[in-house]
Image 1 (cartoon, rainbow, N blue to C red):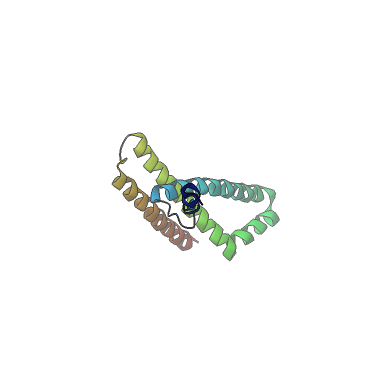
Image 2: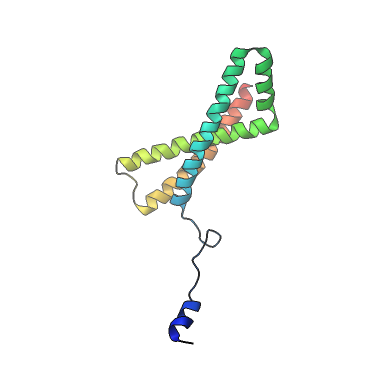
Length: 133
């Protein structure tokens, strides 16, 4: 066997997502896109709720029963988190557009602030909703 054939056999395969660790900026970018899609779905549920409110008490009761169920609360909490995450990450992008926070350390710090802030604001929002109800 020639040296070229031996070298071809010993080359490593390309890594896949199972072995490659995505950096925080990539995860934040992917999450921003996913939360945008989630907010679209949440807006459709909001439209369903508004249409049901206009349609009458029976339709409104159906939507209220769904949103008041444990699955409904979980979906609402997810949409609230998606809204806070998307908003905070959008503000971070505005800073980037102004040329601020583009250094690697600042990008990572901003990512941690967005993740932590979105979770904290979601918890505050849910507590406020429970207290108001």
